[in-house]
Image 1 (cartoon, helix red, strand yellow):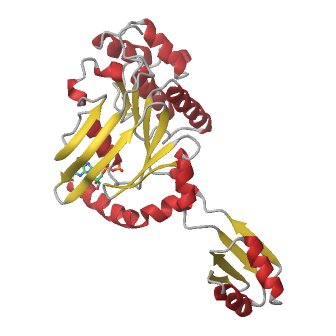
Image 2 (cartoon, protein in one colour):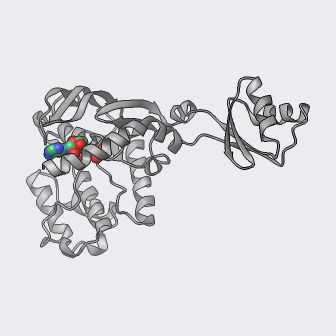
Image 3 (tube, protein in one colour):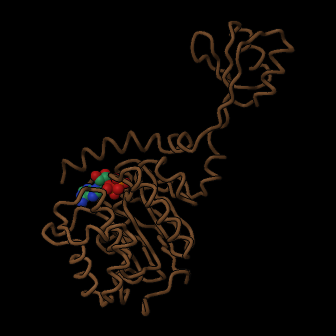
Length: 320
Ligand code: ADP
C-alpha cells in the first residue's frame, strides 16, 4: 500500500467520558480508555455491557450523548480515507448474498481507491483464495467472518476493531484469527477486539478493558488482572474438619466448609497450611492449591453487571 498510514506509526483510539443512553438504558456510562498501538486490547464484558455500542460510536455509526472517541486524534467521520486508517468487523452477516467474495472485495476496493491487487492479498490472508468465486450467500458463519476480516484489512489500516471476531469460528478458525491478531499487533497496529468470554481473549490479548453496565471495571494487563484475583485457595481433605477450621482461622485465614470432608482456605499458602495442621495434630488425606484463574477474576469483576446485563438485555430487545 502506498498512501495508507503505515502500520506502526502509533495511531491510538482515545475514548474520553463517553456516554450513550437508549431510553431508560444507559448503554455507555462515562467510559474512558486508550487503545495503544503494538498490542492486542481485549474489550470484554457480559452481553449487554455496552461493547458494540462503544465500537459503533468509535466508528461514527452511532452518535454519543456525551464525551469523545478519537482515532489518531480525530473523530472517525473526519478521517480522509477511513478504510485506510481503520479496519472494522462489526456484523459479519451484512454482505450482499448474491455477490462472490472476490466481487464484494473488488467493489469495496474500488469505492475506496484501493488497488485491485490488494484484494488478492487479503483473500490469501483470510484463507479465502480457493472460494473467492463462490457467492457469499452459501458461506458458513466462519467463512463470513473471514470475509469480513479480509474486507477490514483491505486498506492496510493502522487500527483494527473487531466485534466478537471469534464467535462462530471452528477450532482452526480460532487458531488462525489468534495468529492474525498477534501479527497485526506485532506490525505496530492498535488492535481492539471484543468478546463476552474471557476464555476467548486470555491467550490473545495483552491488555484488557473489562466493561459492565456501560462502565469501565478494569483497564489492566492480563497479568495484573490475574494477580488481583481474589487470592489463591487451598483445599484440605480431612475427617477433622472442626479442628482444622479452628487451627487455621486462629492464624487469620478464612476457612469455609466445602463438602463433607473438605474445607477451603484462603489467605495462607499451602505449605503453611500443611505445617499448621501437622504441628497441631490435625490429620488430612490431601491438600491442593488452586491458582485463581483469569476467568475467576473476570467473573468476580462482572458479577453485578451480569445480573444487571441479563435483565436489561431482555428489556432492551423488547424495546427495539
Ligand atoms: P454488548 O455489545 O456488550 O453486548 P451493547 O452495546 O450491544 O452491549 O448493548 C448495551 C445496552 O444497550 C444493552 O442493554 C442493549 O440492549 C442496549 N442497546 C444497544 N443498542 C440499542 C438500540 N439500538 N436500541 C435500544 N437499546 C440498545
